[in-house]
Length: 171
Length: 456
Ligand SMILES: Cc1cc2nc3c(=O)[nH]c(=O)nc-3n(C[C@H](O)[C@H](O)[C@H](O)COP(=O)(O)O)c2cc1C
Ligand code: SF4
Ligand code: FES
Image (cartoon, rainbow over all chains, first blue to last red):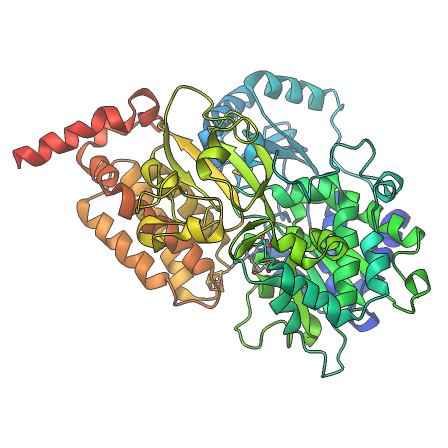
């Protein structure tokens, strides 16, 4: 039995997600559950967390690990509290995202893929996020920030520091 | 104004919610369907000539008629909302604006397929859209459009939304099914096709968001009415995601008959180029389709007007044509460097290869490396030939079409822009800065290459 205890809200949510699949196909809820667990645990999926999920779904731990390492949205190392994920695929590049990423990195004093010393921010390049017509853009938590300019980046970073930025969407 | 089927109601205040949607006739196709024989609905869809909007353009009615209804196994309809093809953002737009349209389509289509458990699989990055759909599905349950004995018809349907977690490959239908089963997104070898053995081994139809969202209209107005829109085998309307250096990027619904010129240059759609810099090239159907140089975009090689239809866009084959694909229409002005852009797409495919087949896993990586070398001034002439060779060896030799999707853009770039690749080899100092063609567009520097050739 795992030591980990999920919050009541999380347990309820997991039950809802499992109920969307036939009794013997609980494993199908795995990807969604991983998202929810990650959201409640500082954006990182540790081994004990994954083991707990395996226990809940009555599957082998390896079945959770292999999925958690295949998909790019699951993290296994600490990321910044605010991870700025810029889309760096062609249509966004055509709208100047590379310069904007340079600007952001310089402002925060980090290289791409690094976390600031205070653990607050990270800058990362990711592949097309389905906002090509609203480029350049970035994803922060569940939300997209589009038609970016250096001014908008400045404002976003300030708002993050002030704790004013919404990260997780609710049903 | 072109006819609007999918986007007809998007500007109505509150249309995201059930009440407003119902007021404009929402869910009437379900009422109609429940009084029909399921196979008659399939026939109606066949008559419409609707072709799948996910990229391949396979006729939807025909696909539905393949679903195995004899084995007696449970059937499923799965909506592909994974939308990750670079350049494509139409499904997101539709789901965000009118989630009930997709849900209505799912109910009517599930009834036609005699499915009792259906899913919408949405990419994990669209988490806020996932919540919108979740809310809308709850509303549909609360109003008796889902669940047991829908509107007293005796038909039961459960519909749920579930999400991915960042993997382009999960847009491929068998990878999507694997992912929906809670596994890694590794495509399956076909056959068996999902229509015979799909989700949990049950007969399954996978359709794109847009394909399903148009079903209510087809049922309400009749397949023949739908087939009257468009030209030939390109019937109806299609959503186009327009991006790049145009004045008005965004999602547009077009009739499958207008000219590319009208789409790019008229105020109803893209509104022309964003600045005085000229159009250099266009990727008309998402990153996987061949890039077209400006001279082949508005006219076919035969000199005819090119149309926004499946056939016209493909006119000339891969030699001088392209594909309408997912409708991800990316416009590049002369600031773009084709070599850099091809490298960018190659990096994408390398990143997204699931790694099951060696031609794709290794080939995409080699292509990315060689293109990086060329783009950064370390390439040689042989590199261009090696690149050509690699893409040729990937195409057709893999489990799923991601391999082809990675190969085609490279092939088309070399085919149409070989001199630009050669320029990168011969003038490395001219392309050091990543914005090399911003300051000096290709048209201004290409004479250097010509001069060189005269000298040799
Ligand atoms: C690598 C790859 C990615 C794909 N991505 C998507 C996608 O994001 N959305 C989609 O609808 N179809 C995608 N497809 C096509 C699907 O496999 C499938 O053909 C489609 O969902 C069928 O729906 P339709 O008949 O309504 O077009 C992709 C195919 C491949 C090979
Ligand atoms: S072609 Fe590429 S993505 Fe498709 S199954 Fe093979 S390795 Fe995976
Ligand atoms: S290319 Fe950036 S969102 Fe599509």
